[in-house]
Image (cartoon, rainbow, N blue to C red; front, side):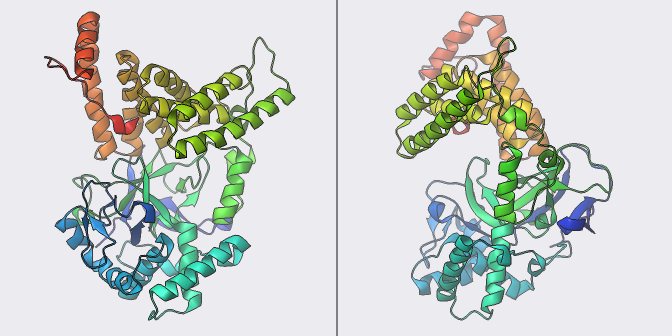
Length: 482
């Protein structure tokens, strides 16, 4: 297999170590490079719900008859995955259970290194061995977990040829460089993988690239990547020749000190990017509401922030317990408390809006959900990069929610905005973008009908929602996105 890495080159990025920069000008939405995983595993908790070959969520997966742990879409996926699963299969059978994902991924990486010496193609810019592990920088708690994983690995692979120091090195590499893999629609994290070239791309809190896992159509890319867990590094805006490529290791929707703390803990470096150094948009993320030039007192803001944090914890507990009506009650109470105190971009306010809109949509209270989803997108637009994938997904969900609420004009407008963003971040062949294109065409047709005769449109919509026979446009329900 040959990876096309003509758009990039490795360079010395100073204190950041190695980095990648462009060798030509790039346009927004352009694929900088695509890369299949060196090794990847499904999360333990989803091992029976996600195909261990293509990482798609599927119903009625077929179980491996030998280890009884791995599950696959069909015989094609199982055959495609056998080369990397066969040693794992034998190990699980002998161990009589499957170890956690960290141990399984480390084993797969080591088996792959043993087979391919850490370089699997001419386009791989670095060997796995050369990636940073930061084992020496680990906190006591993390080091304790590493020791437990090490022992479990040695029990799982007792005949390994590798020494403890080298195995520890691989565990450290995975902790610092593992990339979370999503399902086919990008809605849920389902596994973790290692992508050596991607590991060379340094962090920036306001990056010029985004990383997308694309399970979809291979028509515009090398056919050799078919059915692989393949990431695409895509440009978010114009990037000039010789400019460094960057991605965000953490979500920008945190204040700079929290982002720096998370980056230090997980990746062991002090972020000095412009957003952190100048605390850009931190004021918006903690903004108090201003009315006629007056703001609430610092003490009141502090009290509502503490109340919000407590409420967010209660919401999470109720959500975990499946008590969604309690979640809605808590969200409404908290939003009422926040309304006279917090600005529209305050992080705690946005987090509550996000949960409220999602749960209300699930309970099919679409009108209220649409109001909250619209306010959420309004706040996101002031904080995120215009082509941020989180903004695109939130806009899509808001559009679908408005559509379900019968607000076809706003729903169509938001779906069109989301489509424009996700065409950049995901590209035309991603399943999400294809779904959005279908939604855009459907809502456009319904909007024309609405403009021609509102009464007929609403009558047909009600008939569709009640599953009555009808002629004309059908309302497609994309419940998975809300």
